[in-house]
Length: 211
Ligand SMILES: [Zn+2]
Ligand SMILES: [Zn+2]
Image 1 (cartoon, rainbow, N blue to C red):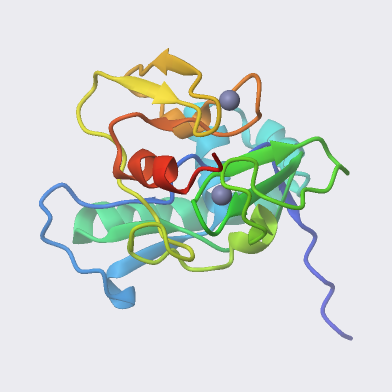
Image 2 (image 1 turned 30 degrees about the vertical axis):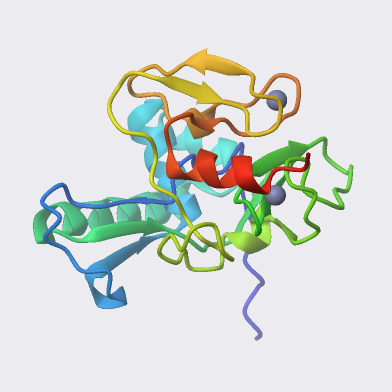
């Protein structure tokens, strides 16, 4: 018997961060010192521990069976515990997922934006570049260290708790609130994820932005 293809786990939206690093700074970026948390594992912790859903509710939300949910969730908790105790970096990458809407990431400026389901995007609304990747594919590319906005580059957020979250396209801004990553907010006009105004990422975008 050939193995059944695994059904995709449905996520309402991709995580707003690509990973976590230990505060000590005493960690390595080597793959063997990184715990790779799959997107569906992140979502399992979000639903069960953060949203406090029962496992049955959470399994329905992700369109998987209850035993499958339990397996994903247990694997997720083991990984997070390992990272906490062994001082490892966590990278959220990979997995077998689909999102409720069509999400894309621009490989040139790093902007993440959303289209209505079925509506295809051809170029980045911020910089106009055509190297845009559906996030469902992008989740399987391992995040590289920030290289100033190169392919797959990731960026450090802004510093401190004050400041603003800003739309990389239209400069719509809201006061940053502690505990809410800017990336979890969407610009109401452009459907683009907000970023920290004082971040390196925003400076790079300002340079790349279509005039
Ligand atoms: Zn772009
Ligand atoms: Zn905007």
